[in-house]
Amino acid sequence: MSTAARRKAGRDKQQDEALNQRPSSSTLVGSRIDTAFQKRTLRTVVVALLIDILAFTIILPLYPRLIAHYETVDGKDPTTFYYAAAQGVRMFRDWIGGTGSRLDIIIFGGCLGSLFSFLQFISSPVIGRLSDKYGRRNVLLISMVGNAVSMLLWIFSASFPVFVLSRIVGGLTEGNVQMSIAMISDITTPAERSRALAWVGISFALGFTVGPPALFPSLPINRYSSPALFAFVLIIIETWYLLSYLPETSHLQPPLQPSAASMASTSTDADADADADASHETKPLIHKDMAEGKSATQDAASQLSSKEIDSRLLVLSLVHFAFLFSFSGMEFTLTFLTHDRFAFSHSQQGKLLAFMGVFSAIIQGGYVRRVAHKHISEQSLVLQGIISCCIGLGILSVWATTVTRLYIGASFLAFTSGTVVNSLTSLASLTHSGGSASKAAGSNAGQDSGNRGHALGKFRSLGQLGRTFGPLFACSVYWMLGSQRVYLIAAASMAVLAAAVYMAVPSPPRAKPLLAKSKLD
Image (cartoon, rainbow, N blue to C red; front, top):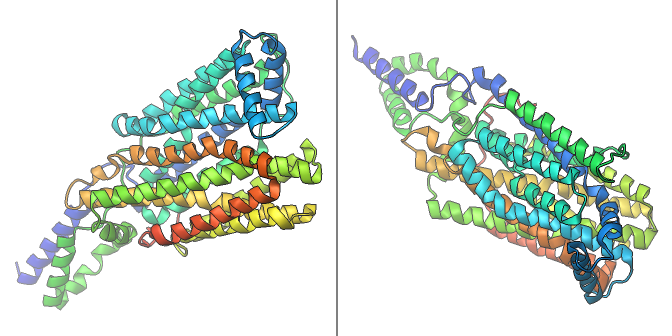
């Protein structure tokens, strides 16, 4: 055998070994033949998430009527749990200078919503860690059992303590959103990550916009058992769908680039022998596009230590907390502003929120999915969204004196809703993937998702903590200082947050798309 032939054989063997340093499965994501699996899994995750959000939103518009119902049942008995809770709400209302039973109901509903978010703050890291150990699919199915138990408790909640228990069980076991993010991260390359994760935000926007049915038939169990039963049926349908169609993803990895040694050897031999280089040019065409998709992110991330990765994730988590603390609070008070300034009816408020939901979905589907990572970095999208929030809050504070101007300000907030959280989540996923890649360099690629669920769970946890306290804080400041001042304060805080993001949050290395045309649409 000639020297050139031996060199060629050696190069081919090294390249084949580099490409095979990952689990051998027909469902590995990233190669041309596995696009169908990737697309099918993404569709399953998104459909299940949409069903889950529809079930979750059923209770939201019912909070005022649920509280009024338990007021008639338990409100006159000083020995009941509801009576004690209502007394606490009244004390808080008096402290912030509010008046009227309407505010009592708003604060009570906010407290119940905050309870759910606080329990998510506690449970998210635990659910993520369990999914790393036992698999995303298994943990998600167990989570669905908890959701079903929560709905069953609601169905039979003749008393307020049983209803609160149903919210506690639901808050501790809800894991669909978190697992959806982890599974999408499992099956996508960095170049595809933001594009695919946008579906999570789109599902939220559509689920909250469509919302639950306005009317439910009455059942003899208690007055609000029928919507609870409807939510329970949705949970059962979702569980069956996941059990039937969702594969396990925690062991799957996007393809890795050929090893550095292999590529260096190829380059050296090619310079030494032009004929061998010419024959070599045809073989990498099979895997060159697969190698490029992750190489840029991995090469940059390989320079980061584990402590640096953890530090970046902590910064992103704190930004997530700060943003949702302010933004969720302003969302919560938006109905106050429309009622006080424009005397909006429930129907008019519903139209405004529906407009914001649809516009947010359009932004995520028509803008974020098209430009994220490929043309605009995730950090830039976060900055765009936060700056848009500054503008929107400023408009609502001093300029929104007509309904038209109100809708203009709301449009800026809808843009924020469609960009910031999704892009922060993508940054967290990319940062963790980079850290895992650096650990996995030269070793088994299967280590890449080793603790992804736990890392993303901690990131989501701090966001939920922001949702816990943001609405109550905003409500307090709104009633003490008025709408104009509270929205100006929020706009200023967003400006400070934008500066912090610009200085402290780095953009991820931009990876080339895995395929010439993405198949994730």
